[in-house]
Image (cartoon, rainbow, N blue to C red; front, side, top):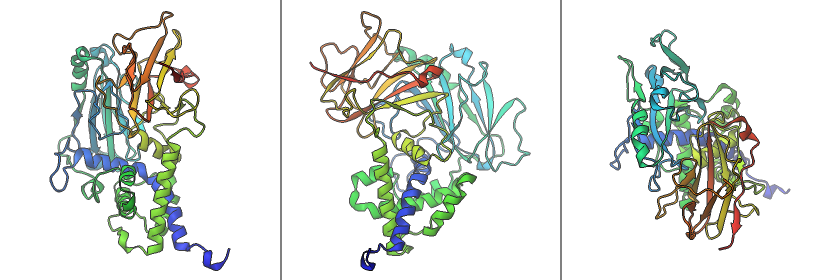
Length: 453
């Protein structure tokens, strides 16, 4: 290599750090961005806040295709969500008594700012008579008062995202599901400050668009998008310090002036370092897009490491990209379907069938469903309003031998009873299995077979 072709070392440094910092920090920035979107009013007009910090929002209907806040939502659940700030003291979460609600499945999943699903009060883990859970932050004084009858959960970060999931069927089932939902309550003890946003939320830089979506829509603005991302990353680190095992990562990122705090200024960086960071971010985004599809073209890919990532930074970033807020595998197993039985990408211009044997349905103790998503990671808007099929879908037609065959494609088949509509292009599926049995780890999910009309 000649001297004239030697890369600028400052640019090379920035590119290396930019790639690592993007993959490592994307889930944190996505968490704070989503908190901004759902809890804080935009600085200059726009839609009103959905629910302030420390207050729960009960969403009384299943997610529809026009809702675009969270990618890959489920369509057979009622959601109760809330952003909780424990920096000003503990919060009390009232968990419903499942026996009062006929054992209906529900889980109150708790996530730290780094997207780890660290606790799951609900049907599987809580007392059937209900319970009070005291949520305590990492900086809460040991002498903080919590009720004697409360179960204490120590939270890894002050910012906690609660995503409550309550299974719901058709319209006739909504009343019972909503009754359970109404029993979920969050209480702030007297004398504590409430409704206070983390500084990274209240001082958010730029718009609240996902970095990956912004890069796809405005590739020519990569420099500005990178500056916004790294600025918000530094602010987010001040609000949610990383775990101790990531101390070395922070020291490395500091070489590019990526340190916790509000003083980061993209324009202060020298041109080679800034160019390198921008290219590193683009490299990281390309890596996520590449890893979002099975590298060996398997019809289905399931991970049993979701929700508790440790130092598996790439998986953590991938889950944040494909479906922020994944549950640990004890609570649910997610399998992603991108390819058919012939290892070809799924495309709605083809017709497919997915066949379960009579004694080979998904092994669960709660319920299962297959949901279809458009290429943009949201529900596909279709005239039937059907986005998922599962064991709670009414009036499905069984095969003569007792099995179940689903039809999937853009063009409606003659019999639409078991049909899941798809766009006339790329799509993917997620099979969700709630309260999976042990055999779910080895169960073979039926591949989609292309069929002729």
